[in-house]
Length: 280
Image 1 (cartoon, rainbow, N blue to C red):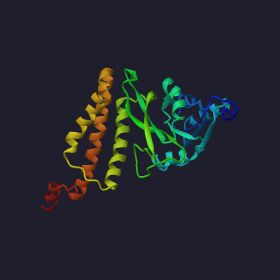
Image 2 (image 1 turned 180 degrees about the vertical axis):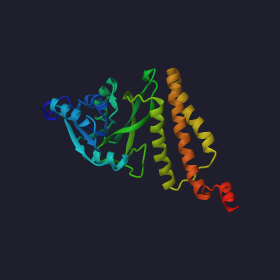
Image 3 (image 1 turned 30 degrees about the horizontal axis):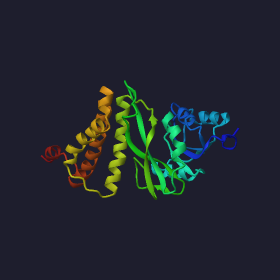
Image 4 (image 1 turned 30 degrees about the vertical axis):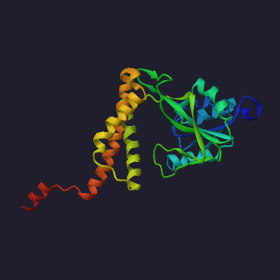
């Protein structure tokens, strides 16, 4: 039975999720969206149990539309998903995220905002190994996640950390959070940060941005302090310290990759010693 037609308590709100091989996380995400009138899930070729889990939830009555699209990149895939939404408001949520109780309550007021407000920024609280979800006063920078349909689009030039560019006023929700649950051990997390830093550095290089060398020295400690002090991760003990340091490593790898790309062009690697021996 389709809840869009039979549940008067559901909000005229679409949620959209992109995924691939998210069997470990996606059920909790989609169940937290049961207050929505429309849930768009765009899969780019899962080979695990993700399609079966989604099919089961559809059978249970969640208003899910399950679509397939080959992977075109983060921004393009999310833009496609956004365009499939039918609600007056559209919520971007990742497969490893879910709404906490306070955010579920806050959404009913957010979608009734004044006409001049076209989007909302929402906090996100990560799960830290050895700690759990950070408390409500320890959160990541609020990101634009809720937009009026037709009042914004993704910047397709962004390869990573993609976001919606709004056409109007944006407010910050001070109630509720997205809970981010992907507890990766450091070895796996570093692989993820390495991949993200490559996408970010490639984007900076393609845009032709110049990056002073001293950024390799200054950016990592700044990034660490912004997270550890500014975002209050120090309140989460050693897990908070690890989270902040991981962010610093990401920023360092990004700066190094931009520097080395330029260095390789200006001075291609040459084993002068081996060349000299070969000539003698």
